[in-house]
Length: 199
Image (cartoon, rainbow, N blue to C red):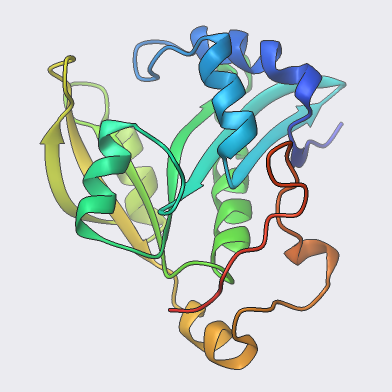
């Protein structure tokens, strides 16, 4: 059965935590409090569903979000007008089937009308080359490196310019057309999140 990408639902947060914490050392741990923070503040928080099971998720924050991740802060101190991909997780048994690429295509489609850049990081070290190649194939470039506080993990900081954003901002200003595929995420703290398309 084909998979679908959709917004996460509140009752699925425990499933998201379990999926995150079974993903292996390349993904930082998550607890219920962090999942709740993501639910309340993320601009993009979607899951992949297949055969009535959640098999992956992706979380993203705008540069204006009240996020305290050290890698997010690194970007915010140097750049503006971006969506930051905090994490993407695909269930181990479902990897290699194009879900990661589908998620990134969906996140870029969501971000481009709203922000000028897409940002993320990839840890450096043995075994991380496939992730760097994956991001390179999507047009990301390195804009710096940093060692994460308290972990010793060194991260490659990546950014992708969203080429159509300037035209969208110039054409539509701060109001996007009322189309289902352009709808912002709805969440408890922001039932209809309005996002500025301005540069």
